[in-house]
Image 1 (tube, helix red, strand yellow):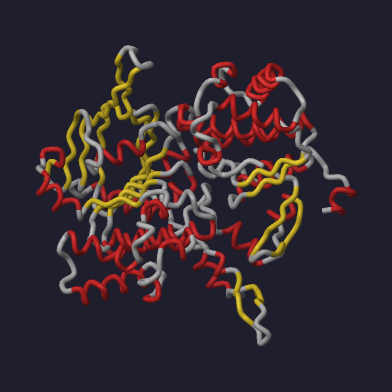
Image 2: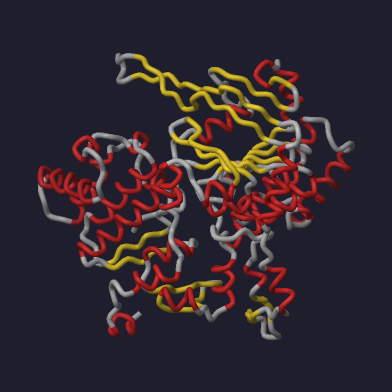
Length: 508
């Protein structure tokens, strides 16, 4: 089995080679020397660079994609007939995801191995699967080959999953959600019943209403006519490094001479591969880490020149929503306390009773209710925890929010709800976003402009439609090419590759 998060699956105090050798020695009657040779061969098979060097490296010294390759090598060490891949690419950026999917396809074909690939991303399903089982509430609600499922989904839940993922070939005003396609009720026996939602033609038109190119252009012109809310000039961030204990000191440049503007009410999408400097840039903007050079102007104030007290006052207007909502919440603090705490710090909301009422109002605004106030973070799902984090962010009455991979860990149905929520909040409160993600479909749906980063520099910046339809740089084209392909003609072509035998299909 290959798990979703490779770093938590690997032991941090053992080298990668030792961990793969351990699996080989447990499953095969071979010597230590032979296990070492087999581990190197496995590293070579999963296309890790410098397999001998990888034997001596620890998990934290590898990138996310390399860590996942080590996990795949470990899973292959027992020569499995079936490999279960449980969300193996969810935490990876789009280009690394493409290489891992290609690797799994090659291993499957070379070894004659079966793969059970678990994912919430229908694009990934289209890329790798021969057949699909759709599960809902512990039951398999639909089974079909990939092409049939994409062309003629039978179950309303499947229809919802296929429609709620942002598409690159169109821009919808709102993303459909699973609840738009199915209704869940409880009958007199207490059993769950699922029925399809019926829509009149005008309701369907509203559900799939698109933003016209004219509307996009008018909004872009309106945003550009304003004074920038945030201006960044020649921003740089360097980290000191050292090779070995007594090695020569050097510097790693994570953000390299970056300049851009963000306008009030705008969403600027920020995309790029892991390690390109996206998260470092976002933390520099908020001074969570101190930039090495450059200038940051927020609403006329030079953020880098502010002393601690003025910086604290301006911080309420500059907020961030992180990728992992569970890690962002205090496990020992109730949800009500978590939302009211920022109000107390910034002296907002009036009396304790007024703060409590505002916390309840914020929870209701993000789709929860008063019953959440006295509950703990572990009692909520991932999507609900992210909604709580959004409510806590809004408690400070911010003007500018950085969404740092804030929907990447959520399944597509919950992701659609959170993305719609963020757009609604932007319209209601006049919020300005920098939206960081490795999913170009999500970024294109939510963004007015997109900025592409690579190795700490800006590759290109432009409107969302221009970046996707007419990319100027090879790097941007490679990102777009790596997006999982859900075109029906390509799915049909792939479906003829490896027909599933009737015996296997009947057995499963």
